[in-house]
Image (cartoon, rainbow, N blue to C red; front, side, top):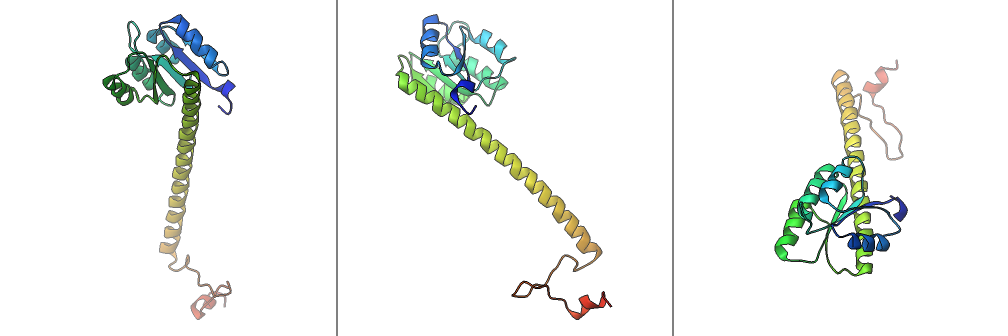
Length: 183
C-alpha cells in the first residue's frame, strides 16, 4: 500500500450516480463498486480491501449494520460512512458499533473526501506498523526471557559464573579464587 494505485477501496451505495461520482473522485485507487451491503459482504469474504466507504441509508441493510459486519470480516480495513441525514445519534452508532474512521455528509467536498481517504489509508499504515513493532518487541522479550533462564541455570550450577568484575580501564579483574582454577 505504498502508493495510491495499490490501495483497494470498496464503495457501497444504492445510488449508481453516487458510485460513479465517488469513483471519479478516487480514480487513482483500485476501486470496486457495489450497490448493496449484502453483495459487498459476500465479496469481502473473498477479497481484501484497505478502505470501505458506505452510504448510511440503503434499502435492506443500513450502512452501520453493513460496516459492523464488514469489520468482523476485515477488522484492519478503514471504514468511512456517507450520509445525507447526519444526526448525533447516527454518528455515535457508526463510531461506537462499526468503529467508523470518518463520518462524511452528502453532498461532500471532493477535496475533503480525497483527504479523508488519504488520511484513512495513512492511519491504516501506521496501525499496521504499530502491530509489527509490538510483535517484534514481544519476540525480543521472549528471547531475553530465554537468555535469562539460561543464565539463571548456569548461575545455579556454578555460582558466580555469570558475574564479571571490570576495572575502570575495561580489563577483567580476577581475584585469587578465580586464579586457582588456572593452576
